[in-house]
Amino acid sequence: MTQAQGGAGRLPAHIAIIMDGNGRWAQARGLPRTAGHRAGADAVRAVVRECRRLGIPHLTLYAFSSENWNRPKTEISALFGLLLEFLGAEVPHMEEQGIRLRVLGDLDGLPLAQRGALRHAMARTAACADMTLNLALNYGGRAEIVRAARALAAEGLSPESITEEALAARLDTAGQPDPDLLIRTSGELRLSNFLLYQCAYSELHFTPVLWPDFGPAELAAALEDYAGRSRRFGKTREQADGC
Ligand code: FPP
Image (cartoon, rainbow, N blue to C red; front, side, top):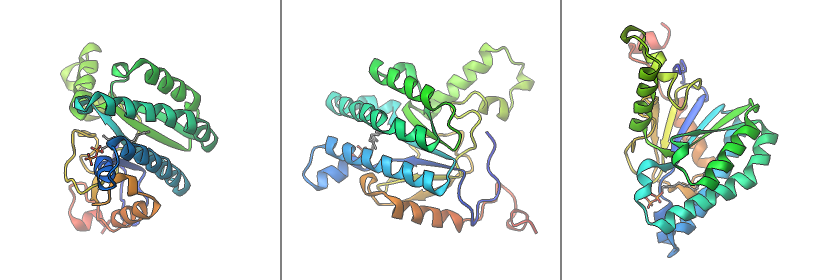
């Protein structure tokens, strides 16, 4: 929706994470890639809990991109198996902790069992108001923008009423603040089609740590990096500092 103001010295209202490096983590240990994803799912649990503890209101995790369908079938089914396990184990905890689950991406393109489990989890946590966990699944940033543009066209909006706010209100993140902080693990320096519209003013934090090794200490380092940034949103440094 709108971008959070300020930022320096404050906690982000929305953290988005590109969780990368599961395969390399496994390879370094002589394990199959799926073992890396399992360790990655454990890291997801730990980071969700830590964000809840810190009071971060929105967390978005890039769990499966629309390009990830190109991976070997066995890896895809392992990932979707882990998703079901995660939902089965975590949804009761999420409900208890006031964490609402949302899905970003094309839910209808997911396998039936996962679609059903996600719908059930979203319904069960719909009234939770302390934190929102967005799982980006079968997600691509360009496809999301196209879906939003199609929604505007289908509603018959006049060209003048197509504003940034109107488009943002039709994105999968409608009603949520834009990410203040985008983290990518594993040393890769790319956005990989993630939240292209929403990350216009996000602060970027890249770490060489592989996702399964990313825990509360690495999150604290990212938050410290963020707290030291001067967020200007196009203003001069003096204007941004409120002088
Ligand atoms: C990238 O690592 C990671 C993914 C494509 C999937 C992320 C999935 C998880 C963290 C686990 C399951 C998630 C949930 C929500 C239960 P990579 O495999 O591309 O690593 P590599 O670049 O080292 O090969």
